[in-house]
Length: 153
Picture 1: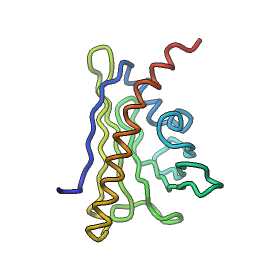
Picture 2 (picture 1 turned 90 degrees about the vertical axis):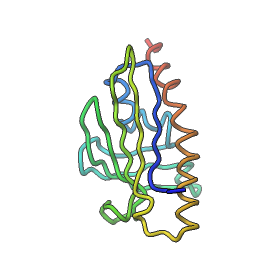
Picture 3 (picture 1 turned 180 degrees about the horizontal axis):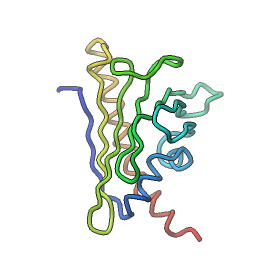
Picture 4 (picture 1 turned 120 degrees about the horizontal axis):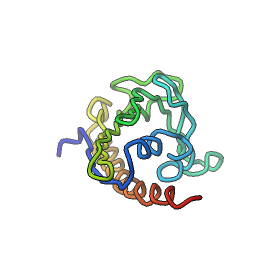
């Protein structure tokens, strides 16, 4: 296995504008992915996402926004050491590419940079598998969450 890039595609019955808002806004992100998210949607902005309870040993993960092109692309680097600038070799790159498709949007998520982290093989394999499991759990939550947005008054 290559352990280099994770790619997933899902179709969402919503416009690219709505999907972009949900994958790039901290308020929406925490409804389908992390338990908390704090960042500004501006290229170069830094912040964090939190899995679990921050005060009870939850994972606080550094987050740096790279590219913000509504309604087509949102990308960020994450997992870099706190206090260090995100760069190739110390972080993973996630890109959400959105393409209009019929009455909805085709979302392509790509996460790369695993090999560049310099991990020993066992760590590389475990990190890659953990992220595959994570994306396979969280991405399917996206479309049902977006569907709830349309029914709200």
